[in-house]
Image 1 (cartoon, rainbow, N blue to C red):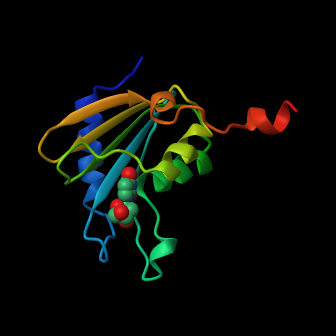
Image 2 (image 1 turned 90 degrees about the vertical axis):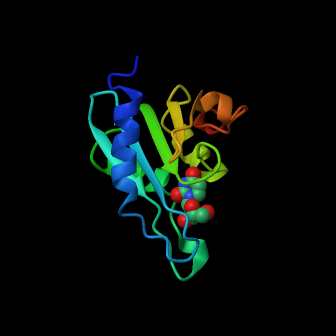
Length: 135
Ligand code: THU
């Protein structure tokens, strides 16, 4: 059960997006994670002149949450100025899956379009630690 209104989460992600560092793509992304204890962690994409080093907004937010002791994610909201609600890339889906498949992913764009899905539906048949630990 999401303890915070999705519109409030999107508002926080829009605010975070203002700090996006995207001089190469020009595609600015904001993300916010709502943790089960009610804490929120934001992220933006952080690009690099060595393009492959660039970080997505979602992974920045995950790193902030986990490094602050929060690993149980209730919801993640992602926003960018695209034609449709911004879906997390495949790498971010895998990165988020590390911390649970039930997380609600709220995708949004600046036109006000919203789409929601559980992470497990965005990343079916995920590779998880079960593969390593239950041989
Ligand atoms: N990007 C994100 O930050 N999150 C996504 O879900 C999709 C893509 C970033 C990576 C790169 O800085 C820019 O958007 C264009 O791909």
